[in-house]
Image (cartoon, rainbow, N blue to C red; front, side, top):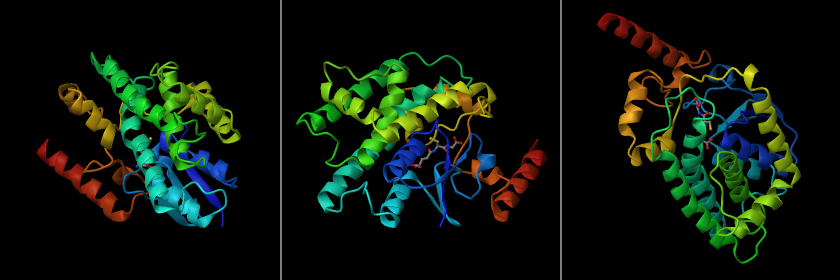
Amino acid sequence: MHLSLCYSPLSPFCRKVRLAMDHKQLAFSLVETDSLQDLPVWNPRAEVPILLHGDFAVFNSPDILAYLDRAYPDAPIYPSEARRHAEVRAWERLADTQLDAIVTVIGTWSFADLPPMPPGLFDAAQRDIGVIYDQLQAQLADGRAWVAGEIGAADYALYPHVAAGSALGLKFDPERHPDVQRWFKALRARPEARIDTAAVRDWWAQREHKDVDTTRVNWGTHRLEWLLANGHADWFAAQVRQGKVLWSTGPKNNAYNSPLAPAWARAMVARQAVGDANSA
Ligand SMILES: N[C@@H](CCC(=O)N[C@@H](CS)C(=O)NCC(=O)O)C(=O)O
């Protein structure tokens, strides 16, 4: 059965999945998309990555990795032993939630048309990422090669954020985090990471030709929480009022507007448009 991955090299979750698929040496095609209109299947949150296995769709990156590990058990990315599995999941979750929030919020200024970054936000990012790198340093300080034993989901979840963070000036400190640096260099040299790096470079080299919505941003879950928790609720409210925010939930859910959305969702959007016109 054919495997394909709906993917954007800008997305750390897509990068994680691709790294894991290349680690498993799977044959797959990429459906590269910068626009949700291109998504070939329905995901209720209209987010990538989406894995297609034949006509079966899996979304949410940890669910995709778990599916892949069951469908293709060679070169496992999760340990089978309960405690080690929980440890890998904890690192993956930290990457997907805490680290993603910091790096992706700051990274949004590198591609979207936004007012200047609110004062203090970059300092908050440096402070919070430093705490995470301290944790990672403590984990790696015993000289282990990979975050939780064999290379796998923990490493592939963390790596895209650490790489993007470096590019954005949110670096680990080689003196305070020498083992993070050692781990990062070792991972970066692997074949699956070289494919990932090349894909990110190609995307930025082709930036001018990319159909990415730079006027509206889908901040999403933990990213939004981190922005608000750092005191920027008013800044964000102004973005909402100006119609510059996209949503993966609620009545304006991106997915409802997709031409590929199910009929009930399109009907709901149509009803809402009539309601908006009547109240105008
Ligand atoms: N929990 C999801 C999060 C996926 C996610 O947030 N994807 C972002 C890109 S990094 C997305 O597609 N956002 C929708 C948008 O930008 O409109 C996962 O792990 O796959």
